[in-house]
Image (cartoon, rainbow, N blue to C red; front, side, top):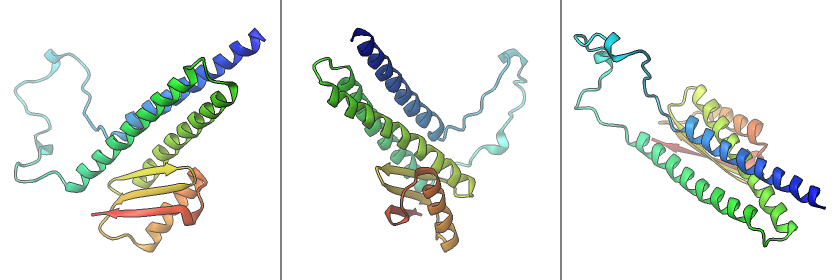
Length: 181
């Protein structure tokens, strides 16, 4: 019996670590962090030249409103997922729970990890199709996709739905696509 309990604890610990990894990867790849990483020492850089001046944005241009919207949507999604992960970790580590409750918590953790992974893949594939930005929300058998666009064509809607169906196995009638201008 002791061997069975320790195997269960190991499995639960592995699932919690996998869920944490999935949340971290979603945050890392979904954050849209396009910072330039410079390697080498500071002494090797020529301080007389201003590299990158051509990429500076003039002060008269503003950050697009939809860019801020997508950043806020990602942040809100991340915060709600972090809270859910924390709750599931507390449930899994609670020694007073019976086996059925632990199995249910583990199942919910696996579903959440799969949803996080699917959302990340869907977002990257939609961006690869040429859309400037998007955020995917998956909740069970439903998906909401927010896409930055000034007018979706029927072919673009079909492409987005195809990606969601293929990556998350969600029925077409449960896919909602919202256009953000």
